[in-house]
Length: 637
Image 1 (cartoon, rainbow, N blue to C red):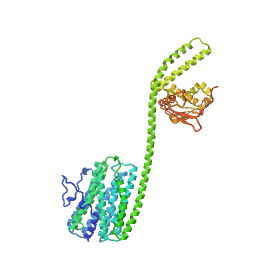
Image 2: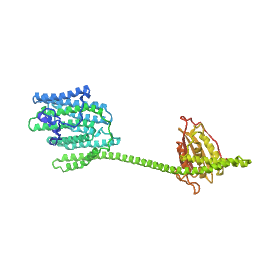
Image 3: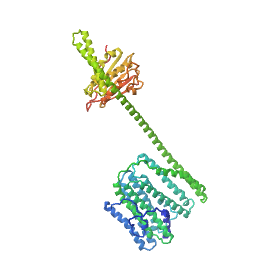
Image 4: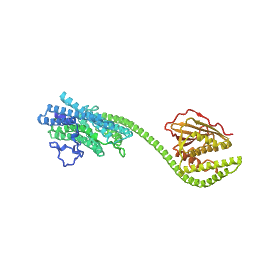
């Protein structure tokens, strides 16, 4: 009876057999004992046992002690139910120790690392559950486990959560998009393994019971599953960091030792030298103790690991495996249809199962494509915004180049104008000092005033061209706006333009150059007046507080501007030939930028254009607006 029981167990843990992974010889000596040929040496960093806590050392020594107890009872007790019972209980305790050793790692980590340890712990707990089922039948019921056994699916699926742990790969820092798509790929792999079990094993268990075929199929399928897990583990090991390599190497060694243990058992069975609880069970017990080693030292390793790194390109092996599972379904359907050795009920069961699997897999692919479409639309929107931003930056660069060229031109012209203006000012002042009648003196004073104004204009042009220093001081914008209206009174009256001003009270002062800002206001007023000629119209000038900035609005009732976004470009103008070269607004733009402000232009819904200027207040705390009042309501008579 023990021999039959162990023979069935070996059907489940048979693995690489003659295709086992060859380990090169090392200079280090292997542990002594009869089973040194299954010891796996991996090129990993040595772990300092002194860094472990006292409780962890005791825990590890207890697990190793269980392995020694297994060796002692194998030598002392004779083959029989007693030896088999002791062996089963020891293996349950070792798996319980391995499961609990992962629990502190689950509690101590967050995010992807917690998911990694949780998946590993869940996989080992499934292994423990299966071992406890065996122990219940053999120790408490004193009977063999049924064949076929409904609990075999627990052992078969215990590698799937461990594959999920590898897919999590906490060594890499991935975004939410990769996690979402990776979860769908893992779901397809999980469903595919369940489909394989239902396709190859279940028909011979429930549709047409055949213990021999059932055992052969689950043996082959479990072998393939362990091949895939070890291959994925080796792939993750090769592209991980040094600290993670240490962890993955120990996990690889434990799983490989577990797989090789069945090879030894089968070898002994073939020569009729095996019995349950014999020395050939020692590699199996050693692999279970090694799981405890991985759990206990894993926490110490993770604490020393560097932060997760972002991969140069996202890994695609999980997605490719997921797509391979989908493409394999038609092959399984063809196999089910053309397999002459299978009875008709099994063919029908497999075809229906494959159709259902195709439906479920197709739904997952639809969801994945939906997420990819959403991502594509998001990337397209982001690229469009990036292109628009690049276009705006390019336009600003072009405008900066134009303003630089304009500054050189204006600077040269202003220097040339200063010489005759200085002569005109000197002669006009000399004329005003002579004996003149009242009308002549008034005309002379107007000449002096206009010459000084022209000099101020050239000074502003030199400042705009960065060839003259600014004279910034605290200014009251309402005073400058009032001066602007007064200076333009004759022109406004001639153009039949009605001016309405709404100036906010208690506005904070700004820090700026009075001459330059006055030229900006005069130009905006003149620009609005020319836009409304020859019929005339209304011009509204408004100042108010907007956050920590003072906003000025110049609104006219003219026809508006065809391209508001280009009015500040140098040499851009909508005036007829001979009415200006389009340099004024670009100069205004430069002056406002020099004052750390912003000037914009837009067409009003009710008609006309509106120029808005925002200038930062000089005070750190601005007072609220108490109201507004009118400085002027109509043009001069």
